[in-house]
Image 1: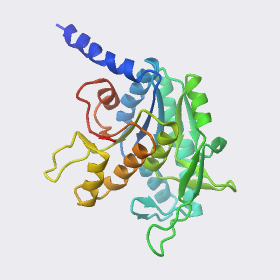
Image 2 (image 1 turned 30 degrees about the vertical axis):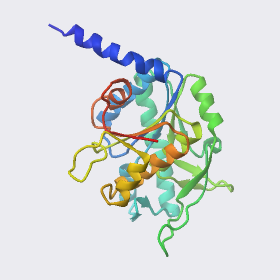
Image 3 (image 1 turned 120 degrees about the vertical axis):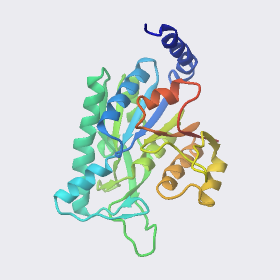
Length: 283
């Protein structure tokens, strides 16, 4: 017999969170390393959020798809500290994959689940104004990799007010209209802080931040996060992600989270349950 009490308890548990976050904006970064099956669950979570009065804004990656397309076109690719060196040829592939292929797939999936998503490249309507990123290592030119200087929050807010879910590809333009590749986590962080979002949630393919004994840390402060980076507990690819989360908090976001996007309905579990999942970073 179906456990109706369990279903009722789940709904009641969600009630205070629905009340708390109603009318608030939550920015979600969906990593390109997470599979399409998981995105089906993610898209349903987004539609649920919108229907209960929360304003989700999606920023997506697509690094794996870009690498496949570059390989297919015999274009070599390389990374420096997690950033893809982006020549003119690479930028054409980035725009094709992120702006046209991946973005459209995400929008289509949300809409097929009852939402009203609008796909945008950061180059649309000067949504993301950028400047060329300075070399992060001596003698290394990243090419057309951009650093966001301004976010057109008015455009995003207009879409949210109209009942839409904005889905943003991390591509921006400089003052001369030249397009640049933007790290997805950095784009999500800057968009969240510019909107003064209630939360920034980064979905990736790991459980969260772990201590030296490989045990998940469910909650830590911004100060503690910086300390764990400094002593090497947080290392490798997690370092730039944590930096983006910390930057978002510094910029006015109230809470930042990194969660395992492979878990079914991870966003619902994080947003509407007492225990949550992954790691939250607080001011």
